[in-house]
Image 1 (tube, chains in turn red, purple):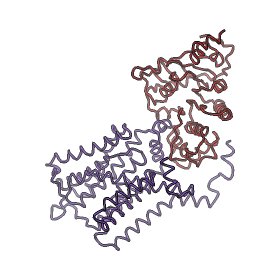
Image 2 (cartoon, each protein chain N blue to C red; image 1 turned 60 degrees about the vertical axis):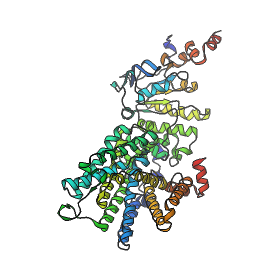
Image 3 (cartoon, helix red, strand yellow; image 1 turned 135 degrees about the vertical axis):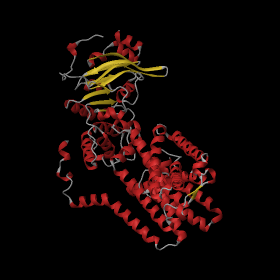
Image 4 (tube, rainbow over the protein chains, first blue to last red; image 1 turned 120 degrees about the horizontal axis):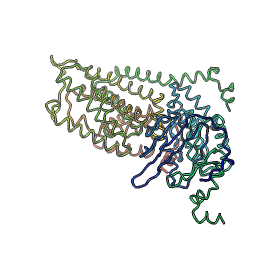
Length: 263
Length: 348
């Protein structure tokens, strides 16, 4: 790995225990080692971009952190606390929120009610329905779905369905937000508001891990980039530097393309 | 962005018209429910004995459909062994009253609690299954329980049935009679609708509807999916056990074939599906409608009654796949009342 600190655009992140740390995290599905020996940590306030070709284990990695898949090896520490193999709702109550790559709205409930589920059952869990619905409305305003609050998820466009995923995660008031391809399938004009939203969350000090294929987005939001390849960490570092790493280009576009680029 | 949420027009509690609407939404359904229960009491004095028994049965099925709706409708776990709670409740009451001479009211409570505990117990492993697997597993539990009951004749009377003492000094609780059972079934039905209403509007109900749609997504926003499902199954068992216990006392003599009859489960499912699963009013409409139509056909077209009933159910499910209540809700909202348009929306 060629580290060149001079090009690092990372802002001065607050010092303290890492919000997320994984130690030798791995998951085997029968004969397939989907993720193996992933060790890294994310300090508070940092935004980590995670990239890698299809099948690199990015989504599995997120699922391992959020408890949707149990790891077969290694540890997950959140705020220094060992939460390896904890159930998803335990992770959610530890203020770790996520979005899903394939959107998972609660059909049969209005957009407002979709978000209210997280307010009711999240870390600050209230039982007062009017409060929960009001809090849901606030989150919806923030992601730009305020006008759609009473509609049903089936009536939303692709971009708005992704915003709903965002809103459901933000309803937990998370410390750590895991975004699984929130930009996928969006047009350029639709990406802009999402980037602005992520930027405002960063400024509030939220720690973010974003799995993304849209390189423009990765460059815009990441303080650091981690590359997964065949379930393992290929490299990590400052965004521009990682994206020009020939091993990364090779992993994404193939050996021959990388060769041609060098010439 | 934050200024919008504190804009004057959005502050609640200043607009009397909005307050009135909120009040009507909050309490309107309960008032309506009370009126209907009052009406049912008034009805009792206007009908003769045969009709009274028929209406009692309708109330029984309202409660049963409502119980199935909790697990099958709200939670989305199609339970095809729901009758196990019915039989368990009925046999617990019969055995307690016949062997230990405990009064009916105590037996009723014990039966319901036993059915609740049994629901939680089998729910813990079975609710890990989904879809058809859950349906078949619960069906197996109900069939298995019937065999257990048949095979301990010293306790349950086996296949020959068991008789609850209702006369002489053996009787611990005087038989309630048609009037008594009418009132009891009415109260249980009203209670089951109230439970459903409370669940649908509560924090718990939100968790349940989220679990129904997507358990991964529900867990991700903090819903303890295991607890939510198991509690619902237990609650569903409670209501069903209560009904079974009352039914056993009403029938006096009960048999395994009757108390664990899979047709009872099937009726619950049909009533909920036709009325609208996951709604409070759907199971009520389904139960009342199906029982009413069935009784009407039985009296007027005795020979082809089952055939006609089946035909009506098939046509109903084809035209209104989502059930009556959701159809009406959608139709009113979109102003599209055509049944064909409805079929197209849900089928094509």
